[in-house]
Length: 80
Image (cartoon, rainbow, N blue to C red; front, top):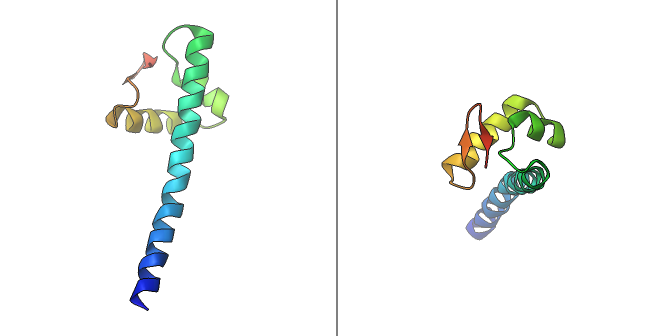
């Protein structure tokens, strides 16, 4: 029975991390596309519009991605 609990916890953990991974993938693709389209740093407003999310959500995710060293984010200057 303990094995079943461990498996359930593992499955729950895998499910809860999947949306985060999908969101990171969505942001990475949007940043890549917009950088090639604009040729410069990508603004939070451009990402917000492209992804259909609030600017505050974009800022929160960019801060998270910057902490993970996946992007370089500077407030008021965009992301590279």
